[in-house]
Image 1 (tube, helix red, strand yellow):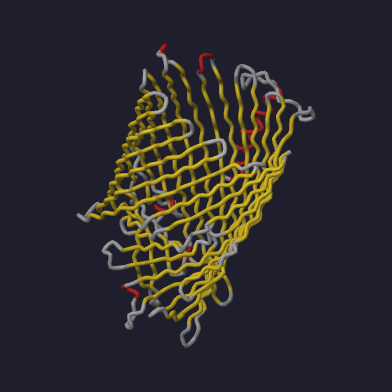
Image 2 (cartoon, helix red, strand yellow):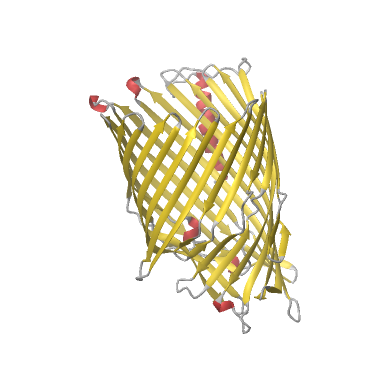
Length: 605
């Protein structure tokens, strides 16, 4: 499959270029690409960025360094000659991130002394990233424009996790066992595509596109567990999963201006086909007598195929002070999820789904306008949410298991908006009513193994219907030197379970503000503040969170210097999960290492 994807992507790029160079009629053009030895206009930039975290996180009587270091470099080249242009991008970099988090579970995990089982984790992740991309644009005869691209990105990742599990009572943490996990990942993503646009008189055109992509991820994982019992127990096991995703899509659309002589109307009609394959080779090994052997309990292969056909119809029409817009998509699916024995265990509903977006706007002079929109969308479950085979989670006693019975989540949204613009000042006010059906919700349960180990299983269910009344206000000013904006969003949320007459309500809100100023001598600065209030969504609770970011830029001839300070006011983030009967509680507190500084330099030529 990798070879086929590569050959197809190569053909999509090389064949059109070869045909153009030869002046063939297969593409209905006679234009030729300028020879590379002809002089053209070159330009580009070279960038170097480095970041460092100076912060030490503290929580009660515990403290630890949570660093974030990174170094990245990149080169961007542009070449233009008559009707031909090419853009080349090369990037490379290294990043190291560390996190500190605590997880605790109540009820079923309490011992006779009333102490709670708690887990404390320190994670360190190092990544090396490399990538390149090429974009080609050229214009031939007969008003035909071509565009082609090819790119590839590689990430090599090294994870180290140290987890302590024990009892806690009156803030005294007694370690029962310690686990160390080392994980190596190799992730490679490549893509290629080609598009053709044909312009006709009167503003009409048609566009054809074709794209292919491939991604591969390989991972090795090793766990070492140490117990404080009479005889320390060491458990070692290793997973070597690989995950492949192949995509291909092609489509054609027509843009028609003033169809049938109707003034001030535009119509777009099109269709596309999308092929997606997720191939999950989930194999494992365990150690016996110092020899790694296959473990059938940790082995499973899955193949998830999806074929989507999409038909689109877009319409825009204006009459007087009114502007009408309509967008319709009819999507059909053919899905199949099988295990390593090629036994089909899942087949998604094949009924086509119609989604739409309708809008009518009323312009009152140059500065005021009202609009009313309604749209219907859906979200399909992901492969991870569907695949029923248990796989390792964030901790050695946590497993993730999908639910093949999940259904689509649908959303119906109606919004009334007001817009005002005058001499750089603007205001936008929205009021929305959002109705979600069969929302996909994460849930958890517990199971005890034969050796007494308690495993927490995380999965997903179509758990609820929800209704949200959303109010949003955004205002600001855009001037030559000063820019300022502020946004406030308020949510009135209510939820009920599908099979039970249980209702939950909550109110929460977000606020953000941003100010930028351009000083003399090419200095500029931007500061942004954001806040999120406490919220309870179904069986999840998140605490309040706020953040402050600062950026300063200096330009000097062809040189640009930038300094970013991120996460200046962040704090520990907490999430609490409740089981469906609300008797079991599982909580996580995490330091997100967001306080770090970035210094970048760019040279333009």
